[in-house]
Length: 456
Image 1 (cartoon, rainbow, N blue to C red):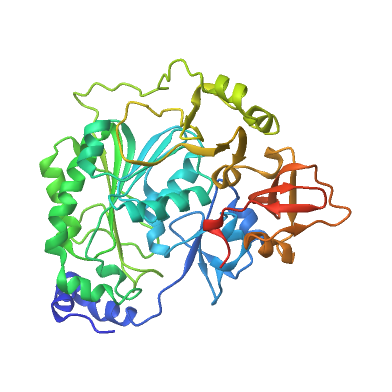
Image 2 (image 1 turned 90 degrees about the vertical axis):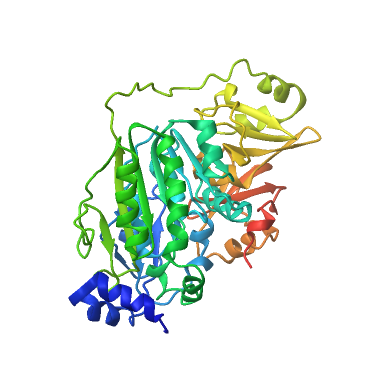
């Protein structure tokens, strides 16, 4: 791999006596990893035999694993069931280190393609609100798919510039993650094409952009809230110097020390941040800093539950559609005032969603399905949020059953005599983990798996 001379000189200055070790580490192959979805699966169960691959644990997160041999984890039914996300191991650190709890208001400001958002959403356990944003509409579409595949219901996926978000929200969020656009030096080993991009746009190009994004992030953070800033670059210009600038520009912000894990090192200027180098850990280069907004001289008001006012959506659905009959088969609680119908699509809004927010949305809450000529058709997104016993009619195939792949390809499925499924909507599962919907017509399942997600 060819590395720019200027970059190598910068690394010599940064690392000193460690430079030769780092250069040797850059010759090692990159590590592959996956992070399991704790909304659907317990890590102990995964380790105890649920995982179909040889794995070993990543030390800086409780649900991340190295893949120990060449495999095709994206070509496994468990991937389609949303049981895991394929992620470079170092990239698991930011979402793992941001303090959040169920019920929090959380913002992932530069979220696509969703590796960190899916972890934040899983940790919220369906409570509170996750706003996942990316300024690129095409990247935001990929973000939405990954969040829905993971079965995260309490989301707003937006595609806005940070200043527009700040204008709408103000100091609203308990925690904000800024995985900032950067020069990508820490990923050169994994993606050599980034070298050319670095030569065209190096650290000096990205630093002003990072400062602008952080300015808006601080505006949207509640007093007492946490802001986690991360990059996948080694450059001090984008790392420690950005933190120094932030602390000087915003007196209410202070660094919150992060615990070092094996192989992690602090900032090169003694900052209580985390640096990850490929010669010290099994992963790529990353920088992570956690900051907190001081409570002093601040008036703090709890966001609480946003009143949605009188909502006649249920009455209209009850009068004009078979939606209530479908919902009678659901074994989950529905708050009727959180329903919204727009252009025939039925949504279940997050508890803290405010209809007055004027933003460019790709999704507001959970898309339950669509009403067509009075008939309700449940969505793929709804299926992914459920458990097998969440719906009155379901069928589960073992992962070795060839009908699993046939279902994921969109084919009609024939049932065996002993497989009794009542007519109508049926939740199709693999090893009791939902994959999607089908319509049972006797001994046949008419496939309703979402065409855009089909096995290729």
